[in-house]
Length: 622
Image (cartoon, rainbow, N blue to C red; front, side, top):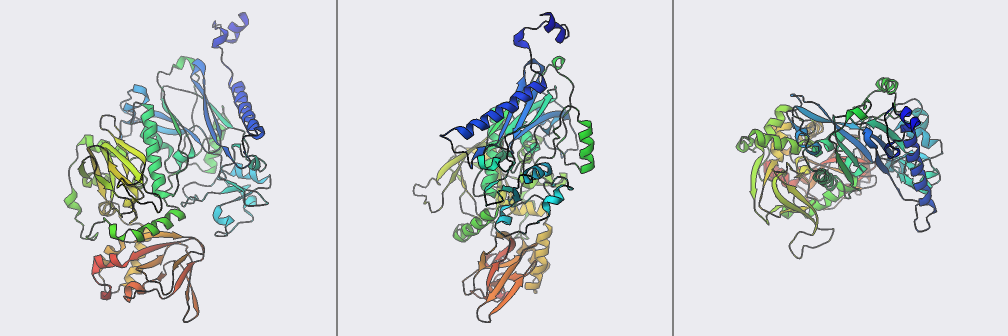
C-alpha cells in the first residue's frame, strides 16, 4: 500500500482505480489485434483467404480522460474541438456547437475537425514502400485492365517522393491504387492493413494497428468512429458539422449515414458499408488529465511535415490530411445514366424554357435569419456547395423556393430527368428504388430503402437530388412524402447562373460556335446549358455507323477515340475538342456516319437534338 502511494504522488488509490500506462495499454491492444487475426486464420468455419475487415476502435482510460485510438485499414476516427468562432467563416453555422456535446452550450464557438487516425492505403508513401518490399504490385484497376500505363520506376520514385496529394492526384472516378500479387490479379485490396485477408497478408497487408493516445480536454466535444463508406464523399469537417447540429448522438449518426447513403446513390451503382459511432463528450475533468495536442488535418508539404514530426513528442503517428470529397461519378454509374436517359425521354420533367430565358429574379424571396441558418447547416456538407463564395451563398438562399407538400405527394420519380435539389425543412420522405427490369406493379415506386426525417425542432434538415444541380441526369430513386411537410427547392438554372460555368464547359462553347456558326453568343450559351458529360472505358462503342441517333459528342480533356467508316475504309483518331455525331444535328440526318470507339478512358460532352430544338427550333437552322 505504501508503494502504491509512492507511485501515485502520495494519493491513496485502491487497486481497482489503478490505470495502465500508455505503453502497456498499446501493447495489450496490439496483441489483441494479432490474436483476433490469428483466430480468423485457424477458424475452420471461416474462409478468410480473400476476405477480412478493417478496424477502428477507442479505448477510454478510466478517470484520466485519456483515449487510445487503434486503427487497422481505412476506417477513421475524428474529433470535433471547440474553437473561437470566426465571423467571416462563410457566415454558416456560427453557433454549430451550441446544440452539440450532450447539452453543452458553447456560444461564440464552432467545432473544428481533427483526425485521430491516419488511413492505411497505397496513397501513403510509407505504406507503399513497405508493401512493395514483399514483392507486391501497387496498381489501379485501370492499370490492371490496360486502360492506363504502368510506371515501372514508380517503386524507386517512392523512395524520394512524399505522400500523394489527395484531391489533386486522387482519381475522381473512384479508381484508387490497390495491392496485387506479383503472380496474378488478386487480391486487389484498396487498404494496406486489415484483420483476416490471409492471402493479402503474404503481401504485407498486416493486422498491426497504428495507435494514438491523447488526453481529452474541455474543448473536445464530439468523437466519431466510422467506416470508409462515410468518408468516401464527406470530409472529416463535414461529418463533424452534421453531428454538431444534434443533441442526441444517435440522431447525429442517422443524419450522417443518410447523407452518405444519398451521395453513394448519386455517384455510384453500389453503396459501401456505412457504419458509424458518435460520442458526445461532456464534463472533462482536467485535474486528472495531462496537457497534450492534436495535429491538424490540413494538407501539409514535406517541410511542414518534418516540422510536425519534430514537434510531436508523445506519438510517432502523424495525422495528415483527410480524404477530400469525391465529386465525380464512376464509369459504371455514367454508363447506367446514359441507359436510363434513353429510357426516360417521355418522362422528363425538366423546365421547358432555356437557361437564358429563365427568370431568376422571379424566384427571389427573402428569408429570415433563422431560415438562413437552417439552410446554411443543410448545405454545409453537400458536395456542390464546398467552394461557393459568401455572395453566392446569399443569392442561393434568396432563390430557394419554399414548397408545401402533402402526404403521398411524389417529389421525385425514378428515371425522370429532374432539375431541382431539395432540402427537407420539415416532414418525412421515403426513398424507393425499382431494381433493373422491375416493374412498378403496385404503384409504390419499388422497395423502400431509406427515409429522410426533417425537423425544425430537432434541427435536422437532410437533402436530396444534389446531382440535378450538376448534370441533366435521370433520378436514381423516387422520393415520396410520408407526411405533410415543407421543402426548399433550388433550380439547376438558378444555381448555374449564380455559380457560373466551369472552364471545361467554356471550352465546349468554343466548339459549339464552330458547329453552329449562325447562332448568337446568347444562343450558344443556351445550348451549353444542356451539355451533360458521359464517361467511357477502353473499347466502348460510343456510336455506330448506320445506327439511328440523336446526340452529338465533344471529347473532353485527355480522352481518345477512333472513328471508322466502312464505306471509305478510313480510320481517324479523335482527341480533346474533336466532335463526332454532329451530322445528326448539323446536317439533320437520322443515322450516324461512322463508328466511334473509345481507345482509353474518355469523357465526352453530349448534346441532344431535342435540346437544340428547345433553343433554336429546327436543327436545319444551323
